Length: 472
Image (cartoon, rainbow, N blue to C red; front, side):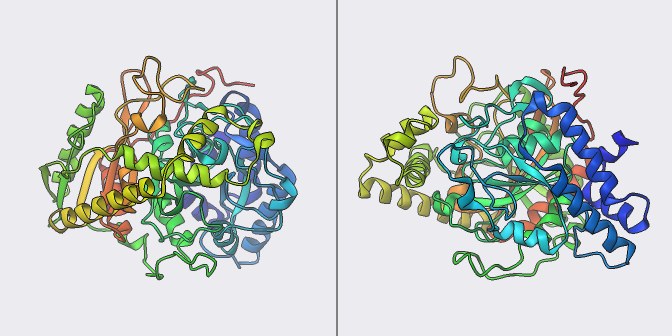
């Protein structure tokens, strides 16, 4: 029974709570036991507080008994990336430089929305320091490993959340994405991850990475992603950059087919070297969208690699995150983070504004592109997960992480919604991902396409933690 409970989606758990078939306490205890037995090998969690979690689950159980469930997620366990403020737990962002007491009794908009809907907080998940890179390790917490193979990385920066969901330690998780940090670990770990349109999910305090940064859901099904979006998009006055509330029925929008849609498929954006096995799997996936009624055209969006401009914007954000930290604190930090910070600190104002100009031009190009094509489909990543505790694969020609994730960061620059869904497993046994990108504020269409693809090509496999040597 414990195995069956762990595999349930949030949508299925909600039905089981409503019928009385399962209780929130039973589910929370089962997941906490699973974390205790297996997380030593994965390191997805940086904080577990069993008493608090079970108390919240008990409160939800009483609400169901009274016939008064709260909102859409009452009793549903959620993993929270340790960059979101939680009033009862410190938020350390993978860093030794943050005073834990200074972060208490505050809540991020996403956490506040989850509270309004009765969620059960399972704990905080790992992140690289300040979420600065596409893998997850930090001086504070060490590396987070991939549940499919603990010698491989889970990706990042939302690697703890992805690993927890993949390993069936949590049905839902919060992540953030400023260059791929939801989609990278989602693809590496074989789960669903959605980077919403910028401003669609309120975020506070403002990210040091500016308009590159998005908050969003990480789940094992697109339906659960839509369920979380229904909650996370609620208004919060603290985010001055949030878009006006559209009150979209994300769950209702999943229905129907893709008849009449025009979809662009690009296997390399015109400049990416892709592992042939991933390229073949993504090309095969195109047939699914044709079967669903869409017209699919193989075409590149027509922009050159914006890596240099992204680097100025992203590493400028990293420098912004460290602007008030002196030599003593910097000496406690990830040395590679300090390297990019010191390099970014030498950028001139005109260097930065030139990158802003390139971002604006890219946004305009994609806006025009989507006048012709409703969606763009690409691989999520050009490779499967590599050795853990490394920023880049062995023998990689570059030293920094964005060079191996060229499909993700362009759409942080444009602010478009982008969803990663599982594409099956490669010959090395590791998951692959497919990315679906839409025009801004068309998150519901992106999720619909992902949901229909998922129904046609379900990915129900879960990593065998015992086989991977993750037994306690």
